Image: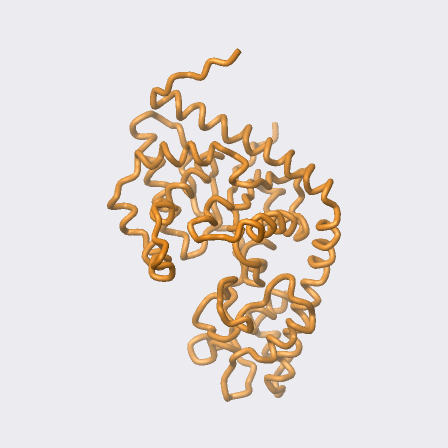
Length: 336
């Protein structure tokens, strides 16, 4: 009898445009996971509204993000790719878990402090309880593993704390999730400030490579990338962060080791190296862009897989939610 696969959960917010960092750091790695794990990947549109969105643009970005998941190679038959807002279980469990989360725990969340500083005119309750909704996302599907970067580790820790507290009161209701420790993606930094991660919200358009940037735009951005005055292609994050970032990107894009890259560009100037990186990234993204364009035209197919995957997510989430409601003593719904 085949061993039951562990469950892996992840997702991205439906805000802004995905960057090369999102692709190399997360999305590309997801594709290799569906053979080993049962995977749930969410379009996290409920999380997105802690910041005000233009409704028309937001709706289109969420749909585009779903299509990008598929264009990148995620098979909607093998994976459950769904819209968070289409599965009401997320909101229901989030409210329940709010009642098992302490103010002191939420007060320690550094991301709330960071986002409050950026959006001082909109410090809302949703921003404050964001980690509880994230806990509901993960716990609904009994996830064993969650791929997280350093900036999300705090949220996984509070998810574990909430689950352990609930289990301590009511028995083994939730699986206690672990951080995914398999192969991790490349950490891609800003092209204009290599001390910061590449971000889809960066105000400098030259700082980020967006997945839908055409080849010429990509090459120009790499030509403008911040480096240093040495003109030597050598990996040294402390002293040469800009060129080291470009080497990381080139390595992740081509599969070449850092040592191979140093040998390949020994004696070459930064202009030659930047050009090679730009060409490699443009070539990498072209098939994704072409597949995305095809999917955008096939509305019937996208609608069909959205419906099918939303149903899979709803069914899986309801199994957990029904158990939770019974444990805490909610009256059972009686239907005709």
